[in-house]
Amino acid sequence: MGDGAVSMTYLGPLDRALTRTYPTPGCTIIKRDIKDAFQIVPVTEDNQHLLAFQWNDSTYVECCLPFGLATAPFLFNLFAEALHWILQCLLPLFYINHYLDDFIAITQSPSMPDPTGPFDEVYNRVTDYLRIPRNTKKDQQGTYATVLGIQIDSIAMEARLPPEKLCRATLDAAAALNAASLSLKQTERLTGLLAFCSRVVRLGRTRLQSLYTFQAAFPHGSSARRRIPYEVRDDLEWWRDSLSLFNGILLINPYRRTITHLYTDASSIGQGFFFFSFKSISDCWLAHYDQLHQSNAATLALAQDAHTHINTHEVDAIHQGFLLFSHHWLHHTLVIHTDSSTAHTGLKKGFLHSPPNAPLKSLLILAAARDIHIMPHWLPSRENVLADALSYNNLEDITNICPH
Image (cartoon, rainbow, N blue to C red; front, side, top):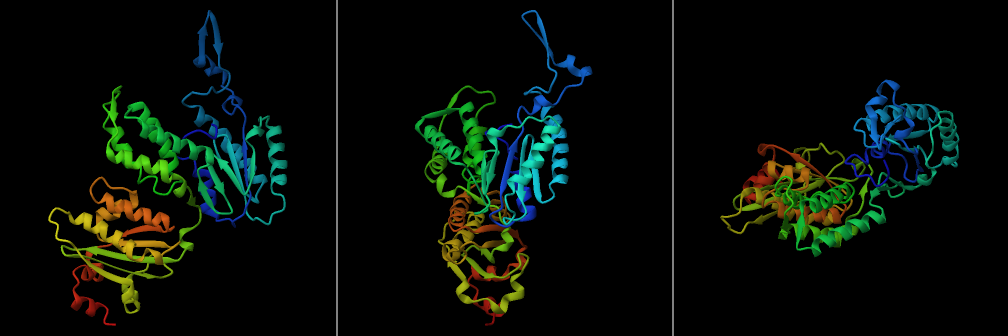
């Protein structure tokens, strides 16, 4: 399976190694690849007749796992797991992981002198002994490497799209915008590419929902073409114009950042919000009510619009909080406390299927632009009394809760 393969779990091995160990920034990443992976695993003679076929009066039999066989990845991975275990036992100073035929090793410390030499000495000896062919053309080592189509940078501790995939996604989005309509096959191909990109593109999932909806509207097996609606064009324009600005996600522990708590609520007449910073993500405002500063709280009156649903106001309350205060939260982990299940779901998924998606999209853009890591938390209304009082601009309740 080459670097260009599209897989929803492509980042798993390296991501698990990084997030489990939190190695010091600047560690060396070593990537090695097995050549003709499936074809080095033989098929037992009792089963070879199952892989036989005839052509021009001749019978051919597959003696090794062929590419395209449904069970080949599973069977090869049993072999790869064994190789992985051998390497990890012989190289205890490395964190090793694999994805089928791709092996990734990460040093524990950037101070290790020439880590590639000791690794290759063992890796080459083991693969030679087991007669495993090496694909040296795909070897990579250094503080950044492209693993399964994603570029990993151990200095910036970031995973991002490499330049060639960034260019391909931008050009494909532009080509779709130039077309008056798209077929189902074209839509599936474009959505699949952008879904791959969205794993390391901030706001990527938010900007994919319209494409999923557009694709689902095609009749099954349809060969017809459909005109591109406005919301799909809007998202494709974002992929075309803004992709490079949001390329890359951090591979560091979000808890190491400054932790800020934002509480919001909306009522029939207004919106209320306040925030404070503390060292724990599980902290509650009640433990710090006497330390809350009035400059970190606000209440906004709502324009009387009978057609706006309360769910939209709830999400917009968070959006307004970002507009007012997000300049204080640069590079923070922001725990957003809300008693709205709609807002909580939208923050977790990155999109909503209804009008609240508009303010949600806007606040996520602000969060991405200011490198704010969002952690949504739902709480019952009885625990959100201060934000509720602020949303009603109820000065008596606010004074009783926070006399200072």
